[in-house]
Image (tube, rainbow, N blue to C red):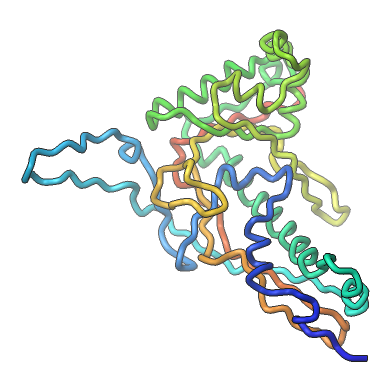
Amino acid sequence: MSQQTLAQTRVVDPILSTQVRGYRQPGLVGELLFPRAPVGSYGGKIITFGKESFRLYNSKRAPGSATKRITFGYQGDPYAIVPSGLEASVPRELMRDASQVPGIDLGGRAVNTVQRSLLLEHESASSTIARNAANYDAAHKIALVGAARWTGTGDPSADIEVGKLAIADSIGIEPNTVVISSSAMSALRFNAKILDRIKYTRSDSPTPEILANLWGVEKVVVGRAVVASGAADTFGKVWGDDVILAYVSPTGGDLGANAEEPSYGYTYLIEGHPLVEQPYYDNNSKSWVYGVSYDNTPVLSGMLAGYLIQNAGAPAA
């Protein structure tokens, strides 16, 4: 029995690397708060943004006069990117079967499986930063209690407006992104004040699009990710019961963001990542092994551009 070659399986590293860079998993919202910003080193200083980064400057100059010079951000806390990677194996027998059916790409499916795990890890890390009340000053957070929660008689639109004003007062720009936990979104579907506000729309329950229009923000997304942890693999909600408002640089996206652009946060990742390592054949398991490296770390670069609402979706009692 002859061993298949990579050419026979039609798997090319650059193609798979392009595939994983464009891969997005439904329900994961961390990169909307922390868009990818390529960096060239595994350690350095976070570019942090204060009010001066959002200031309006007069660029007009008389002929022959000096040109104004501005600086965005300053060197803040250090960051360190710890190399990360996972592998998935595809048994030789499955590869032989797949080779008989054109169009089936088990190599691509293997790297997508790995990428799902890597993205979930990033989602959890993003949530840990965004939901940490210690990362916000007193004017940029609120912890709802009792009936004030959205599951009770609380007023979600009023809470959102307070957050919008806090951000606008701090940086001069209103937030453009609202991340809502799945429990908070569930509470909104039964919240009397929200239902009263949308009763004249074509929908009998709030959707992210309706909420974005109601609250005057560009984007409302629901964080639905769950993770299994502990000996019993107990499921827990990554975004808990919280809501985060943020101004995020609109330069984010698949092409990468500019780390010098004022923003709530970024994901610093090594240039070229995620990337698919050279697949190799493991004789012991009789399998092709596909590894994906995704060296990154989410960082909070502009606390003043964010607002945290804790316990919005927690029980009112």
